Length: 221
Ligand code: IYR
Image (cartoon, rainbow, N blue to C red; front, side, top):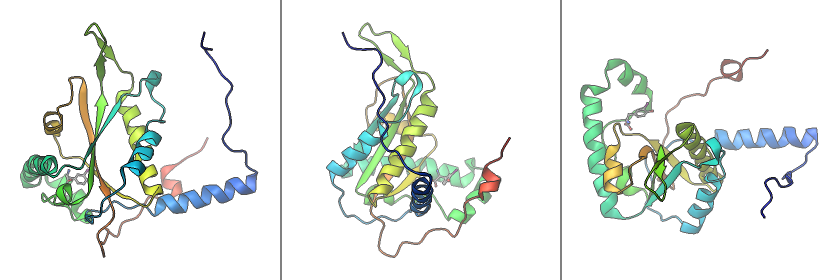
């Protein structure tokens, strides 16, 4: 019989000094991640992507239900369909659906309805939230905290990709139901995010924006 509980093996054991150094180094490294919107066409190894996906799959999830599915898209005709559908939504968004306040908030990012990166980048990863799955009898099995769980897994994936020098763009055309159709995903799954993955284009620039200070993002009791 398989045991219900097994010993926990701590991965690392560090002194305070080592912890301090490692945490500072990781902060510096993660701070260097930037969302970019221009990609090179250089291909990315599937073995590397597989390791990053497996890393994302280690994320904690509600009742360990792992309510995520990642669709890796390299096919140019699928990318073209996604671009066409996304740009249609984005044109509506920028032409009025967003409203003035939202567009003002986006102004520093310099975004618009054109999304050439959806065809140019070597890989798109469509991330789906499994709100429920169907068991063998066809009954719905509800997933708990699905959105939180897939959000955590996506964060881990972005970090894993950054860890190997790949650039990412978190793209959320709204609504994104077209992804369900184009990618033929089953009922119970909802598109969560479209992650654009690749190497940055030569000379790409990023918005001159800051992160909030520690004192602005944290407090103590
Ligand atoms: N989805 C649109 C608009 C957009 C919205 C947010 I919030 C952003 O942080 C960036 C863009 C687009 O991709 O252009």
